[in-house]
Image 1 (tube, rainbow, N blue to C red):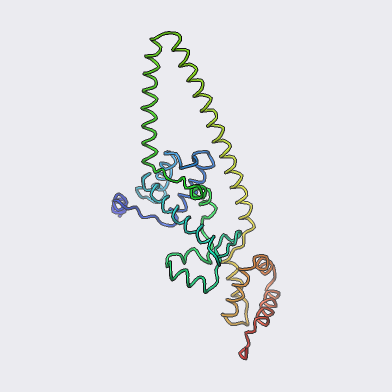
Image 2 (cartoon, rainbow, N blue to C red):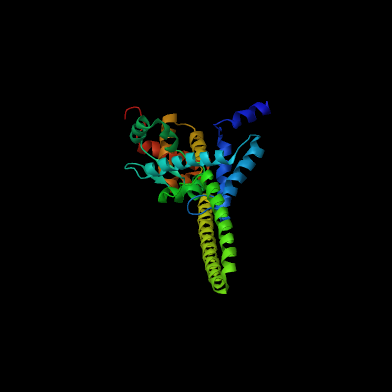
Length: 284
Protein backbone atom coordinates (compact mmCIF):
# COMPACT_ATOMS: atom_id res chain seq x y z
CA UNK A 1 0.00 0.00 0.00
CA UNK A 2 2.84 2.38 0.85
CA UNK A 3 4.51 1.47 -2.43
CA UNK A 4 1.40 2.47 -4.36
CA UNK A 5 1.26 5.73 -2.44
CA UNK A 6 4.88 6.52 -3.25
CA UNK A 7 4.36 5.64 -6.89
CA UNK A 8 1.51 8.11 -7.03
CA UNK A 9 3.82 10.86 -5.83
CA UNK A 10 6.49 10.02 -8.39
CA UNK A 11 4.33 11.28 -11.22
CA UNK A 12 4.09 14.74 -12.64
CA UNK A 13 1.64 15.92 -9.99
CA UNK A 14 2.20 15.82 -6.24
CA UNK A 15 -0.91 16.06 -4.07
CA UNK A 16 -0.55 18.43 -1.11
CA UNK A 17 -2.70 17.89 1.95
CA UNK A 18 -3.46 20.73 4.35
CA UNK A 19 -1.03 19.42 7.02
CA UNK A 20 1.70 19.17 4.37
CA UNK A 21 1.10 22.75 3.28
CA UNK A 22 1.21 23.95 6.88
CA UNK A 23 4.47 22.09 7.45
CA UNK A 24 5.99 23.66 4.33
CA UNK A 25 5.18 27.15 5.58
CA UNK A 26 6.43 26.44 9.09
CA UNK A 27 9.78 25.17 7.83
CA UNK A 28 10.22 28.06 5.40
CA UNK A 29 9.48 30.57 8.17
CA UNK A 30 12.31 28.99 10.16
CA UNK A 31 14.55 29.12 7.11
CA UNK A 32 13.74 32.80 6.57
CA UNK A 33 14.55 33.61 10.18
CA UNK A 34 17.88 31.82 9.75
CA UNK A 35 18.72 34.10 6.83
CA UNK A 36 18.21 31.48 4.13
CA UNK A 37 15.82 33.69 2.16
CA UNK A 38 17.06 36.50 -0.03
CA UNK A 39 14.86 39.29 -1.35
CA UNK A 40 13.70 37.03 -4.18
CA UNK A 41 13.55 33.41 -3.03
CA UNK A 42 14.87 30.74 -0.70
CA UNK A 43 18.18 28.95 -0.99
CA UNK A 44 18.25 25.54 -2.64
CA UNK A 45 18.94 23.77 0.65
CA UNK A 46 15.70 25.19 2.07
CA UNK A 47 13.66 23.51 -0.66
CA UNK A 48 15.58 20.29 -0.09
CA UNK A 49 14.94 20.45 3.66
CA UNK A 50 11.19 20.86 3.18
CA UNK A 51 11.09 17.96 0.71
CA UNK A 52 13.05 15.69 3.06
CA UNK A 53 10.99 16.43 6.17
CA UNK A 54 7.66 16.10 4.38
CA UNK A 55 8.76 12.80 2.83
CA UNK A 56 9.70 11.44 6.25
CA UNK A 57 6.67 12.81 8.08
CA UNK A 58 3.98 11.71 5.62
CA UNK A 59 5.69 8.69 4.05
CA UNK A 60 5.65 10.15 0.54
CA UNK A 61 8.28 10.97 -2.05
CA UNK A 62 8.41 14.74 -2.07
CA UNK A 63 11.07 16.44 -4.17
CA UNK A 64 12.38 20.03 -4.16
CA UNK A 65 10.53 20.74 -7.42
CA UNK A 66 7.26 19.81 -5.70
CA UNK A 67 8.04 22.33 -2.97
CA UNK A 68 8.81 24.98 -5.57
CA UNK A 69 5.55 24.33 -7.43
CA UNK A 70 3.45 24.43 -4.26
CA UNK A 71 5.11 27.67 -3.20
CA UNK A 72 3.81 29.17 -6.44
CA UNK A 73 0.32 28.05 -5.43
CA UNK A 74 0.76 29.73 -2.05
CA UNK A 75 1.84 32.86 -3.88
CA UNK A 76 -1.38 32.83 -5.94
CA UNK A 77 -3.47 32.40 -2.79
CA UNK A 78 -1.66 35.32 -1.19
CA UNK A 79 -2.43 37.39 -4.28
CA UNK A 80 -6.16 36.65 -3.91
CA UNK A 81 -6.06 37.54 -0.22
CA UNK A 82 -4.31 40.87 -0.74
CA UNK A 83 -6.56 41.72 -3.67
CA UNK A 84 -9.72 41.07 -1.66
CA UNK A 85 -8.41 43.02 1.33
CA UNK A 86 -8.13 46.11 -0.85
CA UNK A 87 -11.52 45.81 -2.55
CA UNK A 88 -14.24 48.35 -1.84
CA UNK A 89 -16.78 47.00 0.64
CA UNK A 90 -14.35 44.45 2.07
CA UNK A 91 -13.24 44.76 5.69
CA UNK A 92 -10.18 43.36 7.46
CA UNK A 93 -9.93 42.11 11.04
CA UNK A 94 -6.23 42.17 11.85
CA UNK A 95 -6.47 40.32 15.15
CA UNK A 96 -8.77 37.70 13.65
CA UNK A 97 -6.84 37.60 10.35
CA UNK A 98 -10.18 37.58 8.56
CA UNK A 99 -11.61 39.33 5.50
CA UNK A 100 -15.08 40.46 6.53
CA UNK A 101 -17.95 41.18 4.15
CA UNK A 102 -21.70 41.60 4.32
CA UNK A 103 -24.03 38.91 3.00
CA UNK A 104 -24.73 40.87 -0.19
CA UNK A 105 -21.04 41.45 -0.89
CA UNK A 106 -20.30 37.80 -0.10
CA UNK A 107 -22.97 36.53 -2.50
CA UNK A 108 -21.77 38.84 -5.26
CA UNK A 109 -18.11 37.89 -4.83
CA UNK A 110 -18.73 34.15 -4.67
CA UNK A 111 -20.99 34.34 -7.71
CA UNK A 112 -18.18 35.96 -9.69
CA UNK A 113 -15.39 33.88 -8.09
CA UNK A 114 -16.73 30.64 -6.53
CA UNK A 115 -13.32 29.66 -5.17
CA UNK A 116 -13.07 32.87 -3.11
CA UNK A 117 -15.58 31.67 -0.52
CA UNK A 118 -12.81 30.12 1.58
CA UNK A 119 -11.18 33.54 2.01
CA UNK A 120 -14.27 35.42 3.24
CA UNK A 121 -15.60 35.67 6.81
CA UNK A 122 -13.22 32.89 7.84
CA UNK A 123 -9.97 32.96 9.77
CA UNK A 124 -7.12 32.66 7.28
CA UNK A 125 -4.92 29.74 8.28
CA UNK A 126 -1.17 30.37 8.40
CA UNK A 127 -1.63 34.04 7.48
CA UNK A 128 1.33 35.14 9.59
CA UNK A 129 3.56 32.49 8.03
CA UNK A 130 2.47 33.47 4.52
CA UNK A 131 3.35 37.08 5.33
CA UNK A 132 6.95 36.06 6.00
CA UNK A 133 7.28 33.43 3.28
CA UNK A 134 5.66 35.17 0.29
CA UNK A 135 4.27 38.48 1.55
CA UNK A 136 7.20 40.68 0.62
CA UNK A 137 7.75 38.82 -2.64
CA UNK A 138 4.18 39.53 -3.74
CA UNK A 139 4.43 43.20 -2.80
CA UNK A 140 7.59 43.76 -4.81
CA UNK A 141 6.98 41.27 -7.60
CA UNK A 142 10.35 39.64 -6.94
CA UNK A 143 9.17 36.05 -6.53
CA UNK A 144 10.33 34.92 -9.93
CA UNK A 145 13.12 32.42 -9.35
CA UNK A 146 12.35 28.71 -9.22
CA UNK A 147 14.35 25.87 -7.72
CA UNK A 148 15.73 25.10 -11.19
CA UNK A 149 16.83 28.73 -11.55
CA UNK A 150 18.70 28.49 -8.26
CA UNK A 151 20.57 25.36 -9.33
CA UNK A 152 21.42 26.96 -12.67
CA UNK A 153 22.79 30.05 -10.94
CA UNK A 154 24.87 27.90 -8.60
CA UNK A 155 26.36 25.99 -11.54
CA UNK A 156 27.17 29.23 -13.34
CA UNK A 157 28.77 30.60 -10.19
CA UNK A 158 30.96 27.51 -9.77
CA UNK A 159 32.04 27.67 -13.40
CA UNK A 160 32.72 31.39 -13.07
CA UNK A 161 34.90 30.84 -10.01
CA UNK A 162 36.77 28.06 -11.82
CA UNK A 163 37.44 30.28 -14.83
CA UNK A 164 38.49 33.09 -12.55
CA UNK A 165 41.03 30.85 -10.82
CA UNK A 166 42.48 29.80 -14.17
CA UNK A 167 42.73 33.43 -15.17
CA UNK A 168 44.48 34.33 -11.95
CA UNK A 169 46.98 31.54 -12.50
CA UNK A 170 47.80 32.82 -15.98
CA UNK A 171 48.04 36.39 -14.76
CA UNK A 172 50.45 35.36 -12.01
CA UNK A 173 52.86 34.12 -14.66
CA UNK A 174 52.88 37.54 -16.31
CA UNK A 175 54.59 39.29 -13.44
CA UNK A 176 54.40 41.06 -10.14
CA UNK A 177 52.39 44.04 -11.38
CA UNK A 178 49.49 41.93 -12.64
CA UNK A 179 49.57 39.84 -9.45
CA UNK A 180 49.18 43.00 -7.39
CA UNK A 181 46.17 44.00 -9.48
CA UNK A 182 44.53 40.62 -8.89
CA UNK A 183 45.13 40.96 -5.16
CA UNK A 184 43.28 44.27 -5.15
CA UNK A 185 40.38 42.69 -7.03
CA UNK A 186 40.15 39.87 -4.50
CA UNK A 187 40.17 42.38 -1.65
CA UNK A 188 37.35 44.29 -3.33
CA UNK A 189 35.32 41.08 -3.70
CA UNK A 190 35.93 40.26 -0.04
CA UNK A 191 34.63 43.67 1.02
CA UNK A 192 31.59 43.21 -1.23
CA UNK A 193 30.83 39.79 0.25
CA UNK A 194 31.17 41.23 3.76
CA UNK A 195 28.65 43.91 2.81
CA UNK A 196 26.27 41.22 1.52
CA UNK A 197 26.63 39.24 4.76
CA UNK A 198 25.81 42.35 6.80
CA UNK A 199 22.73 43.01 4.66
CA UNK A 200 21.47 39.45 5.13
CA UNK A 201 22.02 39.68 8.88
CA UNK A 202 20.06 42.94 9.08
CA UNK A 203 17.25 41.45 6.99
CA UNK A 204 17.09 38.39 9.23
CA UNK A 205 16.86 40.61 12.31
CA UNK A 206 13.98 42.59 10.79
CA UNK A 207 12.14 39.39 9.91
CA UNK A 208 12.67 38.18 13.47
CA UNK A 209 11.21 41.41 14.85
CA UNK A 210 8.15 41.03 12.62
CA UNK A 211 7.69 37.42 13.69
CA UNK A 212 7.90 38.41 17.36
CA UNK A 213 5.30 41.14 16.87
CA UNK A 214 2.98 38.70 15.09
CA UNK A 215 3.42 36.17 17.88
CA UNK A 216 2.54 38.80 20.48
CA UNK A 217 -0.65 39.70 18.64
CA UNK A 218 -1.62 36.06 18.25
CA UNK A 219 -1.54 35.48 22.00
CA UNK A 220 -4.42 37.93 22.43
CA UNK A 221 -6.33 36.68 19.41
CA UNK A 222 -10.04 35.94 19.60
CA UNK A 223 -11.01 32.34 18.86
CA UNK A 224 -14.01 32.69 16.54
CA UNK A 225 -14.92 29.00 16.75
CA UNK A 226 -14.99 29.13 20.55
CA UNK A 227 -17.06 32.32 20.42
CA UNK A 228 -19.61 30.63 18.15
CA UNK A 229 -19.85 27.63 20.47
CA UNK A 230 -20.42 29.78 23.55
CA UNK A 231 -23.02 32.01 21.87
CA UNK A 232 -25.01 29.04 20.61
CA UNK A 233 -25.01 27.55 24.14
CA UNK A 234 -27.16 30.39 25.48
CA UNK A 235 -30.61 28.94 26.17
CA UNK A 236 -34.02 30.47 25.56
CA UNK A 237 -33.43 32.05 22.15
CA UNK A 238 -34.03 31.05 18.55
CA UNK A 239 -31.08 29.88 16.50
CA UNK A 240 -31.40 32.75 14.01
CA UNK A 241 -31.24 35.29 16.83
CA UNK A 242 -28.15 33.66 18.30
CA UNK A 243 -26.58 33.57 14.84
CA UNK A 244 -27.12 37.30 14.40
CA UNK A 245 -25.71 37.91 17.86
CA UNK A 246 -22.61 35.96 16.89
CA UNK A 247 -22.21 37.94 13.65
CA UNK A 248 -22.52 41.17 15.63
CA UNK A 249 -19.82 40.07 18.06
CA UNK A 250 -17.46 39.03 15.27
CA UNK A 251 -17.73 42.53 13.83
CA UNK A 252 -16.96 44.05 17.26
CA UNK A 253 -13.89 42.33 18.64
CA UNK A 254 -13.72 44.15 21.98
CA UNK A 255 -17.39 43.39 22.59
CA UNK A 256 -16.75 39.75 21.71
CA UNK A 257 -13.86 39.52 24.18
CA UNK A 258 -16.04 41.07 26.87
CA UNK A 259 -18.76 38.51 26.11
CA UNK A 260 -16.28 35.64 26.48
CA UNK A 261 -15.17 37.01 29.85
CA UNK A 262 -18.73 36.97 31.26
CA UNK A 263 -20.31 34.07 33.13
CA UNK A 264 -23.29 32.17 31.72
CA UNK A 265 -25.89 34.38 33.42
CA UNK A 266 -24.36 37.64 32.19
CA UNK A 267 -24.03 36.22 28.68
CA UNK A 268 -27.74 35.40 28.69
CA UNK A 269 -28.58 38.93 29.82
CA UNK A 270 -26.43 40.37 27.02
CA UNK A 271 -28.15 38.21 24.39
CA UNK A 272 -31.54 39.17 25.83
CA UNK A 273 -30.71 42.87 25.47
CA UNK A 274 -29.37 42.33 21.97
CA UNK A 275 -32.52 40.50 20.88
CA UNK A 276 -34.76 43.24 22.29
CA UNK A 277 -32.75 45.96 20.57
CA UNK A 278 -33.00 44.20 17.22
CA UNK A 279 -36.70 43.36 17.57
CA UNK A 280 -37.03 39.59 17.15
CA UNK A 281 -40.65 39.52 18.37
CA UNK A 282 -43.22 37.96 15.97
CA UNK A 283 -45.07 41.27 15.52
CA UNK A 284 -41.93 43.16 14.41
